[in-house]
Amino acid sequence: MISFLRAFLAFSVLVLVLPDAAVAQQPNTILFNNVRVFDGKSPALSGPVNVLIRGTLIDQISSSPIPVDRSAQTRIIDGGGRTLMPGLMDMHWHAMLVRPTPAIMLGSDVGYTTLLAGAEANDTLMRGFTTVRDLAGPAFSLKRAIDEGVLPGPRIYPSGAMISVTGGHGDFRQLTDLPRTPGGPLTRAELIGGSAIADSPDEVRMRAREQLMLGASQIKLSAGGGVASPFSPLDVSTFTEEELRAGVEAAENWGTYVCTHAYTSAAVRRSIAAGVKCIEHGHLMDEETAKLVAEKGIWLSTQPFVDLGGAAALPPPQQAQMRQVVAGTDRLYGFVKKYKIKTAFGTDILFSQALAQRQGHALVDLLRWFTPAEILTMATSTNGELLQMSGLRNPYPGRLGVVEKGALADLLLVDGNPLEKLDLVSDPAKNFLVIMKDGRIFKDTLPN
Image (cartoon, rainbow, N blue to C red; front, side):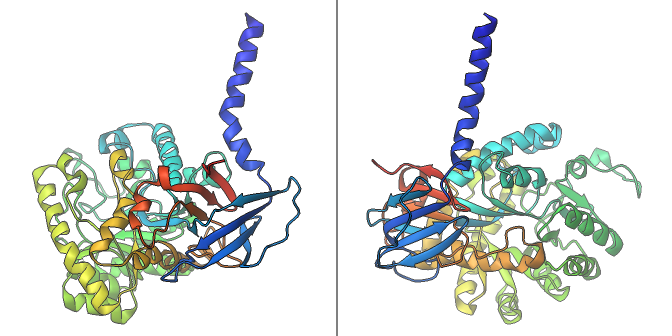
C-alpha cells in the first residue's frame, strides 16, 4: 500500500508540472512558415511571409524561406496562410478583482484570493491577452509568480493599491467604521493592498512611494467618484489639485506617471492641471474638456461600456450611476474621433468571471465607432505606446504590440482574418490556435 501511494503521488506531481515543464523546455528557435501578418499598425494583412522567433524576440520576417537548423532545437509551424498578429492588451484590468465578490475579497485570506487570481490569469492568457495594465489590486505576488514561470498568465504592469481620499472611490469601509482617528488602524482594503487612503499631499506622496517601492510601474489616484463606490457619487471631485500634484511628483521622481480615475469634466481638468498624463474612463466629460485632453496630448484609457453588464448585482443607486456612464459612452468615442485623442483600450471588469470570459467581445463592441483595423491597432500597438510611459519602471523593456524585427514575441495565430471578421476575437478557444508570450507557446491547437 505504501509503495502504491508513493507511486500515485509521484504520478500526480508529474501530471501537475508537466504542462509548465513543457513550456519551459520548448526550443529556443520557432519558425512560423506561411503566415499573413497583422503588424499592429497596418490596415491590411501582409502577403505570405515567414517569421522567425529566437529566444524572446522576433528575429526575422521574410517573404523568402528562412533557413534554420532543423535539429531538435528548432520548432517549425506551418501557418497555412493564417493570420499572425500581436497578443492583445488590456489597459484597465484588475487581476485580483475579477473572480471574487467584494465580500470575498475583503473577507478572505489574501492567499486564497491570489489563488483565484492565478486561475483567472491563465484564462486571461488563453483569451489571447498577453499583457494587462493592472489598475488597482495587490497583484505584485501574482506578477512575480507569472514572471518566474510558476504559473501561466499575462505580463502585468501593476499599479498596486489605488490611492483614494476618505469617502472616495477606493474607501470600502462601512459607516460603522467611522470616525477614523488620524494615524489610526488601516482599513481591511489597505491591509490587503487593494487601496490606500490619503487626505493630504504628504499622505498621497507617502502612499505613492510605497507602491513604487513595491514595484508599481505607474500610480493610480482616484480623482472622482465611481460606479462601484459605496459612498462616492459620480459627480464628486475628490483629491485637491495639490494632492494630485504630490502623487505626480512622487511618480515622476521614479521616472513614471500617474493615471487618474476620472469620469467628469471637473475631475479630468483638475487631473490635467496637476500634471496627470493619463485619464481613466472620462465618459462624462464635455466637449471643451475633450478638446483640452487632445491639445495637451493626454492619454485617454477608456472602455466601451455599452450596456449595464454586471450592474444588476449593484444596489439601485449604483445601477443609476452605471446608466449615466453607459449613456456617455457614445459621446465620448465621438470626441475621440473628432479630436484624435490618444486612446487606449481596456475593459475594467470587476467581480465577475462570466464577464471576464467576454473580454475579447469588448473589442467587437467598438465596431459602433471604429473599423476592425482601428480597433486591433488600439488593442496592440497603441496600447504598447502607453506602456512605454513607465520609462525605467517598465518591467518588460522592449517593444510590445507589434510584429516587427526585434519586438518581444507575444503572438497569436488566428484561424481567419480578424481585419475582415473582428468577432473572431470573441471566441478565442476556437479561433486562437497558437498563443505565444515571450517566445514561449502556451497554447497550440493546430490541426495535425
